[in-house]
Length: 150
Length: 364
Image (cartoon, rainbow over all chains, first blue to last red; front, side, top):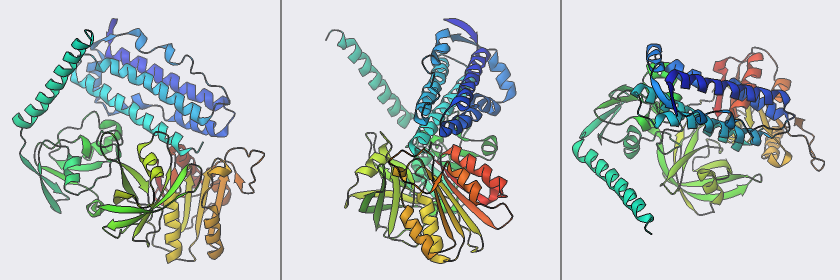
């Protein structure tokens, strides 16, 4: 386990979110089902939770916490999250939504990894807020699945 | 057994510590009796400090909607705190926009009462009641959607507007939980509440509702919701539902045709297959009686060889696009369904000349 800055953790989370967005865009482009195309296009355009959370965070405070050190385990977020999560072009909307929940959980695991440590209260606030955002998204995804519209 | 002993001792220590902390909090941190001033003196409550604002309000029979039992995961219990709520917590921020934070909007379940507090809530919430009811009928309208008719006992009547919802109490291992369901019975039926509920595998509320039998006792609170149907009979209504988003439409449409038999109204409903269709015959019958009522159902999945369907195909926003004329007529739209459907329909309606003020939506 190494030590990096909070800013670096957030940069990695942002990269993950970007990859997630591209994952949905790729599905939207190749899906054979119209419903999956509509759904993944929507999911790609609304996958900006980190940016939204940081927007609410005071800029000066963000700059301060970005420099703070934090213990980091490289395995807490890496390519393994996307491994075995490839979806075929004929995947159903339910398949996509199930995978989306799994991928959200990867980000939650990273944020919880930070929350397990003794950290600055502002860092804790930010990461607790990020966990809630992802949990809220999981509930939304499960509700969309339950509606059985796509 | 030898290995179990340290685990049991450790678990016992943790339980003991938790109990000691909660006792200490009650004994040492005594906030006393605090006042809750609702809507600048409209109602003043005296409650024990130390509890959450949501539970204090509920105990005083001011029912704020909440679907997660106060865990801060549904975001339904938004109220405005004018004074005394303390800082916004990180558990609340994902549910609040910056403008809401600036305006003092909070999640009632996350605000702990430590001092006198002043809040503002929509006037309607002061009229929300808790009802006891008995199941009058249940009917499966598709393979996974049940229609439940509840006969109200105490109070015996409800005053609801089309588009409003109730919260049905369901038992759970952690105690009673509430789940929100739109009222599908028309507002002129005062002594009953009809709900349409899709079974969600593992869902506490929907599993409970699907297992209800005639004669079972139930508890609900309501009505909730801010939608107000335009009272101007010249305003054309466009209702769009998807999946199981039918309940508010049914209420709106039957209420409208009881009051204004000639009013123009559209119902667009999108689902996947013929097995997901419900209420089509009832609405077609209504359309025969009221020529200004138009019904369009659309199926989005390709038809299987054994399916017979001569209606529209494709997603429901495409049907809206096909039938609704562009122009500046007085129109109002009510949408109910999953967020991507709402977004797609809103875009179509904007292209047809609807302004955001003309569109109300109930996003699941």
